[in-house]
Image: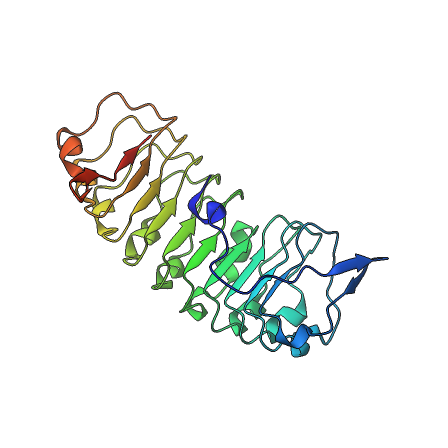
Length: 252
């Protein structure tokens, strides 16, 4: 299970789970104080007008597994929002309005290649987590490298024919999942990912690894299952990071 999807919500106040009656959202009376709102696993296609101005303190909004075809306009009014999950919907594009959420740090969305290319990624200067897995992406836009604060990227199960060079500019990246794509090799300068700790490269078509792969000094968890590897770099065994005299590197 990819890193972002396996992670529970950070220690936050208990999320509000509104009732849905006759396709109408029934919210608690103290809605203005809500910081976490979970509307996932429903059949919502829109949110009521005025909801954004009411939820003045909302920081985390979960809208996954609904029937939204676009990001609801009221979401753009949530100025305190730091995490947005709109995965597993029916989004046709990733609205430019998301760029108004200046403080957004985590975003999960089922988006398309065309929509991510049109999105002005430089606006998301504080984005730390991004899930664009299970789409049809074949490459990344050049502006992707502007996500300087990104720490977690799930780009698994797309149609990437080569490792995106734009990822190599993300020096703060700690968790990366590129599993289930179509590339067969890793670039020698993958060592530029000097902060990466968790790396998923499962079910690709790789038969070898570059020698520089062993220079990822902070690597703690590495998934290479489901490839065509026949040999490992000579320095592979010595690349394990040790902590309290015990290896914490997992190679599955």
